[in-house]
Image 1 (cartoon, one colour):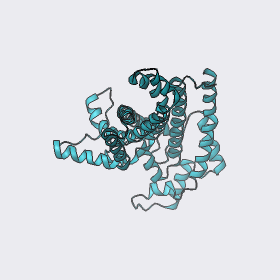
Image 2: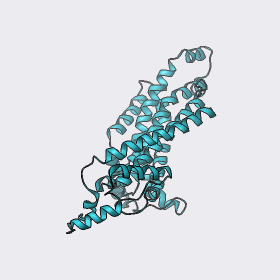
Image 3: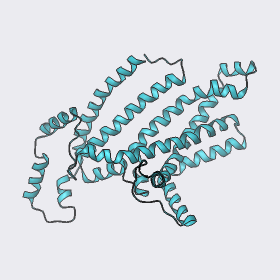
Image 4: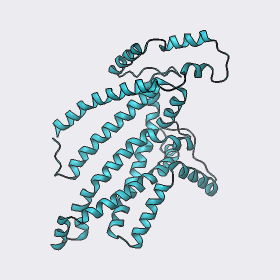
Length: 317
């Protein structure tokens, strides 16, 4: 297990280097000039000399190979460079927005797990009954309703029923838990519902497949209680594909809450990604892509380790 973990950690480095090289060159294909957008965004009359001077200050006048060399050297020192738009460090820009995106992703994952595992289990146990049909309707509704639209419905419902709107602005949890939850709970619910719908369907399908296995029939033939069979044998094996879905969805939520953050006016990683793309901020886009790639890699590693814990037959070597 330890050697497997060390080997996977060593594989992270070439993977991230490959991502960094790919995004560096692909992003240069994007049309537009960040300097022109920055200086002439409001219709300002800026001379070509000022534009060239700004390009020189930002290092964009250098040949492409020199920009690439500077970028890779900085990456080796964990320096993602400076934002071409704000001038602040890319590390700082991302670090400011990580807490809110990470908290919403964690809360949405917890909500999804608390909903999907019980509902998926009940749906499989009472297959083709009204309980199963009701759970499946809820799951299909969650897949059909976009998260941002559900968020808009939540805001309208809060306004119509309680004449209250969620506060604007993120407050850290350790400073004011009530104010923090009043901002983050609503996007977490809107995202967690769709998240739960996917996991519920996966849980139901996996559990139905496991319940057809020979060892389950053998346990039933021996007179073992159904509740004991579910807890000790069926659930652990059925959770394997569910854990995969939950892990990948969690990594996606870190940078994929673009529209939902816009609806609730939350300045997270997703909104930062959109702003960087519209402005053509190369350095910030590169840093965000590397951050999200790192999240996916480490979440996949955690999922692989959970496999071995859930199913002892799986040996990581």
